[in-house]
Image (cartoon, rainbow, N blue to C red):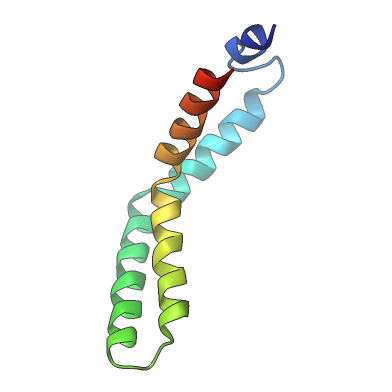
Length: 86
């Protein structure tokens, strides 16, 4: 029975929600966001090297960028693990 629930990709009435989430994904992973993330990582790295920023705060920013841009791979890995387990 759980496989039937997983087979339904877009439930009825979810069109606006799916399109809003697709827009949000495009915004968060678009060219502007990538440029801002590259600049942020460069600035944080420079500030960490010069001693103006705590290493823990700098690592948090860098790890956050990795999670943001790697979210698709993380979710697909979780889904494949759940499919194998279930």
